[in-house]
Image (tube, rainbow, N blue to C red; front, top):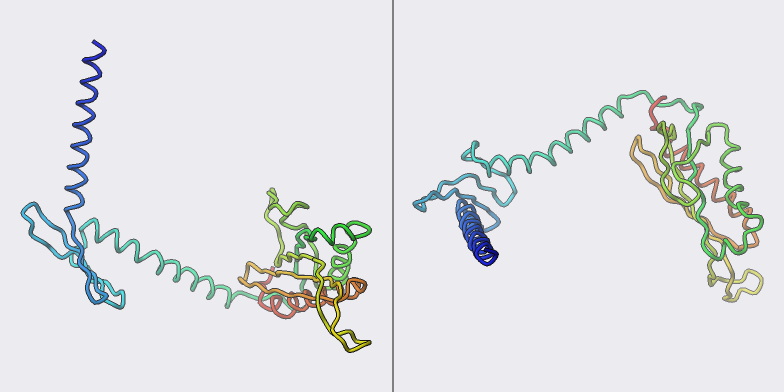
Length: 249
């Protein structure tokens, strides 16, 4: 009984595979495509082998549809329309932003500071821990327009999930590293090596979409002054480049 059942299952399996292959072959044979000189033509082929032109695309990617009811034609049109719809939506958003009221010069700009990322060398020498991040925060907090709000990332750099969306207009992601660089010794005028502290930041705005990067470096023993110059660059981007286009709250 078991042997007969096994043979029956094997026979059914073979039949199913054969039917599936025939179905795939039949489907694949329903349409044919020809390409030449950058042009593409798609035909529907009937059981007698007669071809009917469904659509064609020229070298400039302009499409002419000859059978609007054909499923392949509908699929092609849908694929073509998606980019156009996205472009139209973005154009509408840009138009809405351009006509929306903008914040006034003294209105607050809400800024979130992601946790400062330190490389291994900086983590080893920073004393007390968190001092560099606090220097940057103090510089930004001293501005009368910039208002610091909780960031979108936790201390491990992971995105946080909040019950309510962040009100931040601008997000600042910064990192600090120590590097050995070659330069000219101001005292001797000769090439020499020094350990530099390097600050880098990416400043982004969602509305309007914008992204800027700034960097500042200097001798590691002058880290306080270097951090102040770095913070001034960040503030300049926020106040002068992003701020004027932020919509009014």
